[in-house]
Length: 323
Image 1 (cartoon, rainbow, N blue to C red):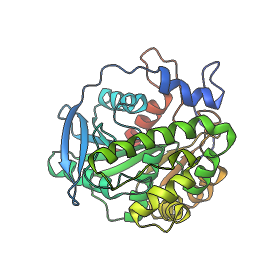
Image 2: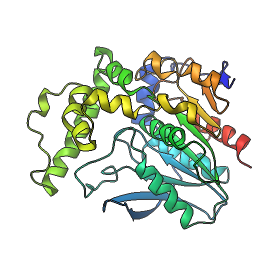
Image 3: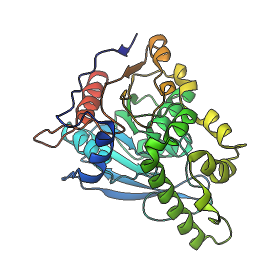
């Protein structure tokens, strides 16, 4: 029963507030020392993905997946890449369609459960490398993508893929969307919608007539956004159909390699159904850790070398399962 009942995370003084944990790293954390080499690869549908490598010809590779409207240069991504490099791992931080600073070619962007692009990245990395071990790391929506990828494919995974670590995962997208629509989370919802609208407007400039942001001011939550944009772009009936079919919780039982899922109990983005206790108790591969504190992609540590608890925890887990 890989249910981790006692987490080692202890927040610093003044970081027991979930919103402080969530906002502080995004606004104030600075991560130095990461140097990326960018590579652009094609996708099967004639689009592109921008991959940022931090590699030194090591034998182990970790592919790191960002959250909703994130990118490879967010502090949590840079912190994880730096920690991986310092422990003898190459790192590949990839940007979802439209997240690398340039609009993608196709009308659609990405969604929180689409795993095809992750599969493309994995196949490319393994085809052009010498790696003997591969791990996946995912944050928030990126964690949902990682868990779906592993759960859907079960035993049909590359042999070098050994383990995965995920943080702050909305593994039930419907309940998370409803949680973010609550008044207490208005600051986050407004930010997400502002970023998404800016992306739609950039797309409108390069692909006139394909998308339209008229009436966007009336959108107040993810249900309205996903009804209008995400569902039609990916062939879903509506937002609820998208959330149901794209949530990772329903496929967790299919995971067949060691996975750590860390969801803080005070995460303002997560509802109770985002804590898959039963699945962790029944599955010998899913390790669920639920610290009392941590916020959403927080887990702040005031370490002298600038490393956060989440980074040390991820490497500890990977070191256990990856020789």
